[in-house]
Length: 425
Image 1: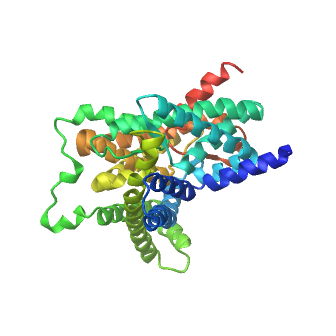
Image 2 (image 1 turned 30 degrees about the horizontal axis):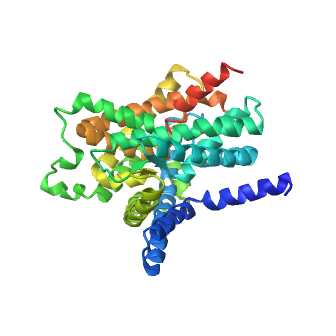
Image 3 (image 1 turned 90 degrees about the vertical axis):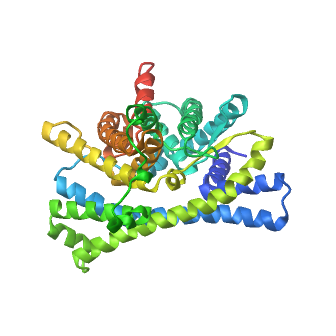
């Protein structure tokens, strides 16, 4: 087989197993077969695992338009232009230029993660495939900017990424113990998780859990996490409607009256969260028992590092608190940047404020109650803006896009890698 054919085969394998729905279904299938389940149970468990992830993904898609609305209102309201942290724009550019390197790096990193999980006492396996591909695409873009060959990018980046996947899931598994012992997270937000866990020491003695907050009878409906999140989103929308201007909002809403549009988008956001949580529950109900079959043979007592929403059911009110606090932190940082003439100005990437902020809110609440959830999410949201600004100039061809990889680990651990690597170039 010629070189072009080999690359095509590798790309095909990565495109198939690199799809998280297929990968999770494959894990469930192998696990159920190892456990010698009946054929009907194997088919049902595999399909329900895949369907659960598809439902989760559909929920993420549903909240995309409401998040875009709030993002636009924040940008217009603050009246500044700058770097926008948003995965999909920069990921597509990374894959266009370094698609093969990213795919091969993912394979090397996955193997390294398996080896580390198999032969150490920290048996944690990252399995959030799209986020892992985001990471390797980021690494390929950064390393490509240093002029490295394909082999150097794949080997150096693959080994570093594999170690990072393992460490990140291990950090999550450690701090997730008060929440669940069945799984952990692999998300590029481990620095935020550490902040949430360690900051809990400041609040543990005098801060109750967000889930224990007592509401007046007239506000008992706020105990419903979907409703409270929807209302919080609605309030944020209206705040920035009046900051950005009703005319701007009406332009976004087109023919729909602006107030109707804002209300419907806010409720759509809540509906999307409900869909995400339903998909999470379906996926975990099948995947965790099935993975036990794989773990028995390959990775005994291993935990899977899964996506952001898989931790949300352990703290519905904390999700809302974390999101709002993270967004407020990022908005404050952007305002400080604008006022002080800091460059580049980084705009709040509302999508990451939701996913990362909500995740940090849940972890922080588990370690120090609602006060820690507010504090940790705010600090991480504020810190993120400046770390993106420091990392952005080193992202090679991505600088021309005006976009950036949005989560905290890209802009702390990633930045540290860049600084160390630059010493040898």
